[in-house]
Length: 257
Image 1 (cartoon, rainbow, N blue to C red):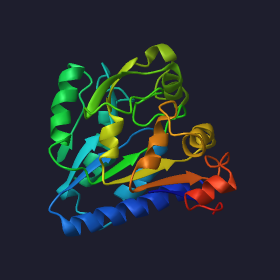
Image 2: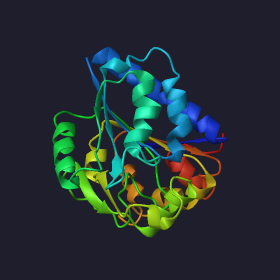
Image 3: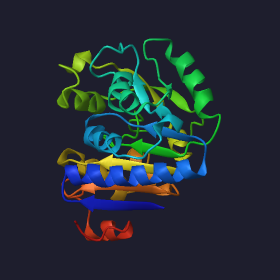
């Protein structure tokens, strides 16, 4: 079941999503000795992760962390490195000790296989994801592979995806953006028990419309979230602007907050 929550602005999106994430983590930690978590990166996740890591009473020492994707060939010292991002904004701030990084500087297929075995070793409890301007989920750009059963894939990044990274300030030019990445597969993301998607900003409005008002299709990769049993998508009024009242009602968000 997919639910959509529409908040007034990006700050409220971050706070509401962090509150839900914290509640889920606490509940899971009461039930289990350890929780397996997937975390997304990117500009859309910055305020959400800041809010979440400032939330008290989460036993992060019992959280095992995986991440969604990483550029092939990008050093960890680069400001756009997702390993660097997660270390600085989540791992080091919380005291997580079990982190499975995707080393984009090593042989990508070997890394995909090794981390894939680790993530497949047990069910993943919770995932934080975003949606790209081209509708991508992780780095599964359109047309995404909905059928691959491997946990991680080596993917080619399309120009729209790479341009988004430039526009967000992670790279100085399109030529600097790697053309390949290691990405968690669509099927592996869908294996997660609960998914929280944080998708603010007007520049995501077209992708949001394509994913939540059109067909479920590899051309709008995040549309596949509509098949998941427990996904909550947090939008602000700008990212939700192109959804009709009927669309919003369909997913339990009849009006803007």
